[in-house]
Image (cartoon, rainbow, N blue to C red):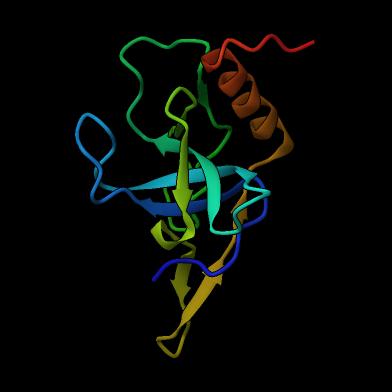
Length: 133
C-alpha cells in the first residue's frame, strides 16, 4: 500500500517500479526523496539507491557514508545513482518497517545525514549539468 502523504525531504523509502519498461528500473528499490511537488501532492522526485557499484564511477554517483536501511548491513556500501532521477506517485512508495515484539509493524523513517544530502545534491547537479556556486 502506498503512502498517503509526501515524505520529508531526504527520507529513504522503498519504491516499486513495477510497470516500467526496461532499461528503466522495473523492480522494488530503495530511493531517497529529494523534492516534493508543489502543485501535485501525490508526486515526489526521488534518486534511486543501489548496493551495486557503478561500472565506472562518475560525478553523478555518490557512495553514502552508511547504509540507510534500518535492517541493512552497516558495512554494505550504498550508491546514490543521481543520473536516474524519477518523479513518482506516492502510490509506489512505502516506508520501512521493523517487527515489534508482538508481531506488529513499527514504521521507520530513515533520513540521510547532512553530508550525504550534500553529496547526493552534487551528484544530481552533475547529472543535470548544473554548476553549483
